[in-house]
Image (cartoon, rainbow, N blue to C red; front, side, top):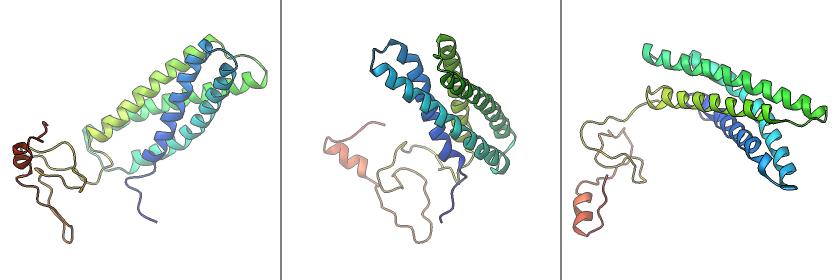
Length: 196
C-alpha cells in the first residue's frame, strides 16, 4: 500500500465539508420548496446531516493525529491550534444538531425555523474552520513534502508534464524533463500567446 501523505485528515475532511454544507443548504432551501419535492429534500437534508456528523468524528480523530504528527514551527503551530479549536466547535455543533434531528424525527416532530437558524450558524462555523484549514496548508505549508522555489518570474500553472517552464524545478536523478525555453516567444510570434 502506498504511503498516505501527510495523513488521512485531508481525505475525510472533504466528505465532512461536502455533506454538512449540503445539509445546511437543503435545510435552508427546503421550506420554500413545494411538495412532493419538499419531503424528498427534507429526507436528503437529514441523511446528509447524519452522514456528515458521522464523518466529522472520523475527520476529528484524523485531524488530531495530524496535529500531533505534522512537522511545524511556532507560527504554523498557532495557526494549526486555531484551526483545531474551530474544528472542535464545529464537531460539537453538528453532533448536537444531528442528535436533535434524530430525536425530533423519532418523535414525529417537524424541525422548525429555530433548527434551521442553528444549522446556518453551524454552517458558518464550518466555513470558518475550513478556511483556517486551508490557511494551515496553503499559507504555512503544513503537510506538504516540498514547496516549489519561486525566484523571479515563473508560472502559476503546469503544462501537463508536472514540471512547467519558467520555474526553478530541479530534476531528480532518473526524472524526465522537457525544455520549454523559447516557447513563449514562439507562441507570441504565431499570435497564440497568453497572458499570466
